[in-house]
Length: 327
Image (cartoon, rainbow, N blue to C red; front, top):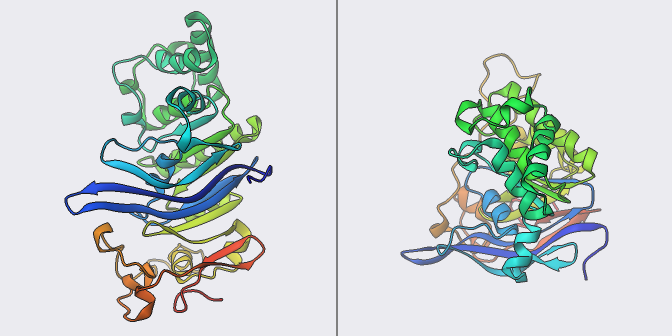
């Protein structure tokens, strides 16, 4: 039974990709919830399964190489993984908006910006072409693109990276979605533009009362924009909690390592930041047990049996490896 407090619930989601040695799990039994009106951040290093998780939620995996093996994704009580194609198209883009990682590849370079926004409005809200074009201009104004009447006629290649990302946000928010999935929306943007884009997403989400899933590898972004955080490592959730709780009381060794590697004002100038030893193992080499122990080249029983998720505080869960978890 889905809680009425949650807009999205993910239960035991597993996603795999086909390879020459068989199906390899990039997302392995992942569960988390997105409360109504809140922003949940998913954080971890590159290759930990964050983006694959996000694309699995809306069934945008590459086919036929990608496949959801099992699990449930309940959106407002309805399982997205069981939706018929027509119903899925209504929800995806209408009730769930996706802001993709790379704005240049997300936008069609041979169609005008206005046409790409208008297409979403005509498809999901049944607007006429003229009405949708006027609404596209309003959306560009909504995401603070100057001179929207002129910009709406331009092609993506004539815009800067920050402007293209604002267009991507306009497309994702055109139908006033209940849930926004932002997959590293500031990739390849300079620091100033990154802050502008994140502030814009936060303000627009608050105006519309939407929930959000924010994918990032930056804990600073999580601290500023999210209510809850899910820490992923090697395709699994290793810890989840409210943002304040997680930053004040991290319980998993990987979470602690991520936090310690963040720059701090008290560090001396030009000092070396702490780093996490080793690297994320290739998917084909994942062990069944604790994968952070695998990274640290430990041996023994912790590599054989998968640690259970245990509750260590109110709404605070951690993967209970005896060598990695403080429980």
